Length: 137
Image (cartoon, rainbow, N blue to C red):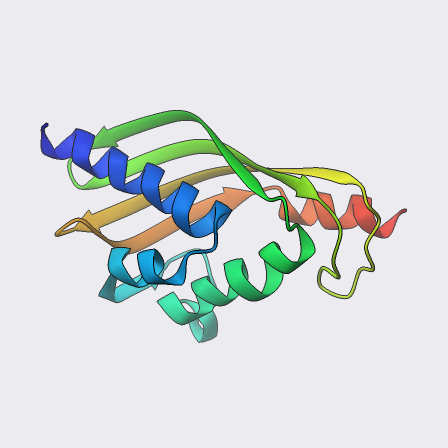
């Protein structure tokens, strides 16, 4: 297997084991010590802040959270992924009481890997649209 396919497999594993299953051991295994999330504020752009988003924000709000990957493109040390995060709003999300509504967050992200680990991330998602929709319930 070439490095591009290995990198794509690492990103798939991250999405399933970390985002969907909230497995902290796998998260720590796949994160480079110098990781930086380029899409997050400077005060919350490290791996601990990223783990907090999955573990303390998304998973409690959407216990049945699932990730579906539609496309992946790998070039050099980067993998771009188009995916959707889905779930049922069963817990408090950023102050919004459970609505029991099904949600879908569309995501496009780019991950740069080094030595098989996440070292940089850039992303766009529709979470703000989902939040506005849930608030209108």
